Amino acid sequence: QVRLVESGGGSVQPGGSLRLSCTVSGYTFGSDCVAWFRQAPGKGREAVARILTNSGTSTGTTWTVDSVKGRFTISQDNAKNKVYLQMNSLKPEDAAMYYCAAAFKNWCPLHLSEYDVWGQGTQVTISS
Image 1 (cartoon, one colour):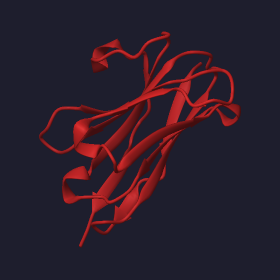
Image 2 (spheres, one colour):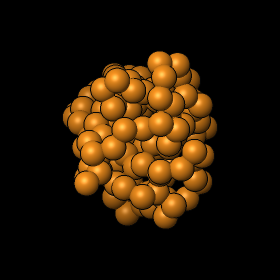
Image 3 (cartoon, rainbow, N blue to C red):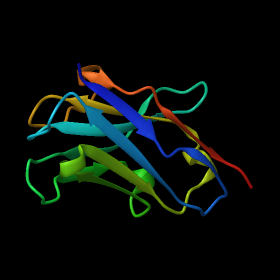
């Protein structure tokens, strides 16, 4: 059974940093898509970053939403079956529940409905 587990959330001041981890169990990625989404109260779930993983040691193809470009970086550690979201220069509008999701495809879908497995989320709060 495939499971995704997020960790690394917490409370941070504006301008601070967090690194979120998505640990994948029950599946070994070859070329598949892992994405980070976030959802703030009363809002829809928004795609933040995506990575097309690979079975080697090189960096997969990545994408980030415009609002986090230059601040957030998605990366993989294939040997550990982990995908990370490094979040720097955090802003109040970044506060949300962050979810990782996987699509067992060799491309990254645009819509959340196309993802196959979801984690339970990790909370990120921004407190001044």
